[in-house]
Length: 467
Image (cartoon, rainbow, N blue to C red):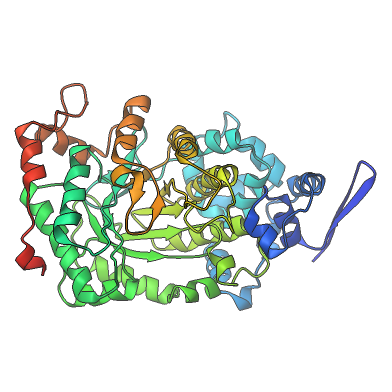
């Protein structure tokens, strides 16, 4: 592989290969510093960006950052590349691609056709030479629409995941958080719970709890218990009412092994869910989560910067045709994204890269209490992502997840964003909210003293059936 060199001012900057150039061009990330691959000065970072802008997009097909023979994710990326879809931009450099993305000629239709021809490394590269504003403008042009019982990703709409986590998976506690969220109009993307344990019986009880709730109030929704994919497969085999199969994924074969999966296991999970034929408006049956730093924490990054590795995870996601994907942007901790500036940048990068690759992208706008960030920073990020056309955001009661012990968005944050941007939930879910009297004639929340709201709030799960 050739080295890259540039004279900037009075200093000559040399980068050994494309992998080193990509890492040095990345915005400051504590994870790249931890790995010893990030630029040690802003001058070196700018030098890398000058050089990266002149790299032809074709180079990423000819010089894989992780060897083809060593990694199944690399093989997936290259073997599934659509040369015909790539042809409109095949002559461009990274810098020219950036200019095109921000031009009038780049439209939603053009981006949809282009997505199969882009590789994660291409979109990661172009993101590195873009400002936050650029990432928002380009991502806002994208449209990735998926469906199961609701249709997610339609232009002009904002969906949400209702996350009713509970430290002990107590049915009344889970139901209480869920019903509270429904009165705020939250949950059209998914009602998804992180179970306190990975026990098959306990996970199946939660699936049954959500399915009884769905049928009791005739809610167009999908639920997901965020257990390991192999547990979901067992639940399907045992006859559980499973809607979506969940799995955390990463951008390298070795990092995915750390999650206990490979591409074949993920495909088996998808096939298991498809076999149930539970969707009504679509057959996207996977819910996948990612996050910058996961491969580094598993020592499975092959010397590639954390943002590029994250983008490679979206190639895995794209292959599985998921309903939703989200980056849990600030959850892994300050070792990988140190402060609010890095978390905000990572959230915008991940959303941009995922949507350009044709992935139905959402974000968990979140941080841990030992990061240099606070709720005001999350307010900034949620408004930026809404401007960028994010498919969905995650909300938890009071913005405080009492089981996972991190800070996210609250139910009323979703309401505020919908009013601020004029973006209602998924059409099927919106129609249900009107039918139930939970929205008034102007799309505002009905008083929780209404009879329908009281029925929701007063609902009690059949604990005997869940015990």
